[in-house]
Image (cartoon, rainbow, N blue to C red; front, side, top):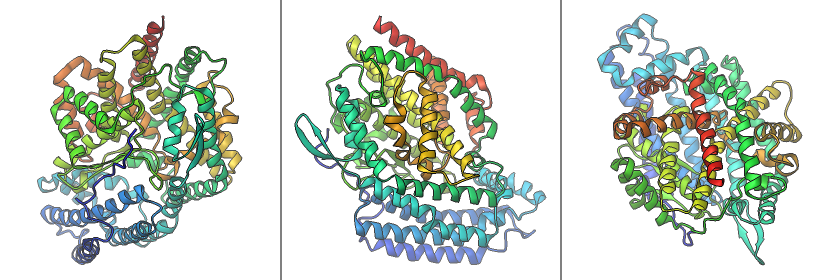
Length: 594
C-alpha cells in the first residue's frame, strides 16, 4: 500500500484554485458566448445559410465549449479529491454556476439547428464542409421530438444547479467524509470507505463480516438523507422525461446512448436468464472456502492468498508491460500518464470513493482517479481506468471538441479490454497452481461484477422508476427491491442477503449521477469479451482496427462503429458469447481444483 500521498498534477489546466487565469478565462468565455449569440441566433433557419457558414458556426461553438470544458474539468477534478475544503467547495460552486450560465446562452444553437427545413437539412448533412459535424447534426435531429423551447431549456439548466446537481453534490460531500474506527489485530485505526473495503478481501471471515457491517451501518445511519437525495433526483428525472415526451424513463438514456430500447431489453433478458452461472460459481466458491454458508461479506473473500502487495510504481510497470505486448502505443500512453502525474492514487479523507477517468486537454493526456490499496484488485482497477485514458487519448488526437464524447455502451470497451490484457498477462506469469486458481476466481468475479451485478442494478433501477410513477419510495421500498434483485442474481448460493446487505443500495451512486448508466457496463463487458476472443484469433491484425475504433468518438453511431468490427447489438446470440465465455472460465477453475 502507498504511504505518502500520490496526487495528480492539474497545472496543465490551472496552477491552483487561486490562479488568476481562472477569472480571466471566465471573462473571455463570457464575451465569446455573447458574440456567438449575436452572430448566430436567428440565422440558422435562413434559406441563405450555406454549409461553409454553418461549419464556421460550429467551429466558433467548439471554441467556447472547449474553454468552458477545461474550466469545469479543473473544478470537478479538484473537488473529487478535496470535497471537504471550503475554498474548493466555493470555487466548484462558482464554476458550476458559471458553466450553467454559458450553456444557457448557447442552448439556442442545438434548438435552432432543428428549425432548418428537412429539405435544406438533408442537403447540408451531405455537404463536404460539414463532414466533421455530420453525426452531430444527425443526432441532434433525433432529439427534436423531445426538445423544449429555449426558455424552458434555460430554466431546466438553472434549476439543476440547486436541484439534481445540488443533491448529487450533497451525496458526494456526505459520502466522501465517511470515516470508520476499525480494530484489526488489536490495533484500532481510522479508515476511509475505500480503505475499509479492502478488508472485504481478508482471509478471516469475521474480519470481513465486521468490515461490511461497519460500512453498511454508516450508510444506514444516513438512510433518511440518502432516500431524500435519491427520491428527488429520480423524481426530477421522471418529471423532465414526461415534459419531453419520453415513453419510458429509460428511453431518454437509450436515445443519448444511441441504442434501441429493444437492444437494452434483450441484453437484460439474456443476462438475467444466465443468473444460474452466478449461482453455480458461488456455490463452488463456498466449497473452495470450506464454509457452511456463503454470506455477502464472503463474496469478495480470496479463495487463497497471494501474499504479494503492489506499490503504485509496480502496478504501473505491470500495466505498461502487459500493454506493450498488445501495442506499443498503449504502453507509451501509460508511461506519459505516470510521468505527467495525471493519476490521483492515494485514498484519503475528503477524497471521494471509486475510480474514474476524465478527458484532458485536446491533443494531450487524460486524468485518472483511483483509490489504490495495493492488492491485485487495485492493480486491475488501475488497468481498467488507464484503458479509459487510452481511449480518451486516441479520441482527442483525431476528433474536434464536438466529437470527443462516447456513447455509454462503448465508453467501457477500452477499459474492460485493457483489464483483460492485464489479467492475461498476470495469469501467464510463473505462478503456482493455487495462484492461477486465485487469479481465475478473481477474473470470474470481476466479470460478474461488471455484467450480472450491473444487470441486477439495471432491474432495480427500472423497478424504482416504475414505483416512482405511483408513489414516493420509502427506505423500506429501496431495501426490498434491492434485496429481491440480489437474491435473483445469487440464487441459493448466498444467504442472509436481507440481513447483511439491504442498505447497500445507497452505496451505488450511479443511480443518481447518471440514471440508467449501469446497463452500459454489462453491454460493454459482454461486447469486449467477444472482441477479445477476436483479438486472440487474429493476433496483431486485430490491433489497427481496434485502435481506429477507439479514435472515432461520437463521429459515428455505436452501430456504425461496431459494424466495422462485424458486431450487431440487436442480435441476442451475440450476447450469449459472453455468457459462454464465463461458463468456460468456471470449467477451467473446476479443472484446476480437480
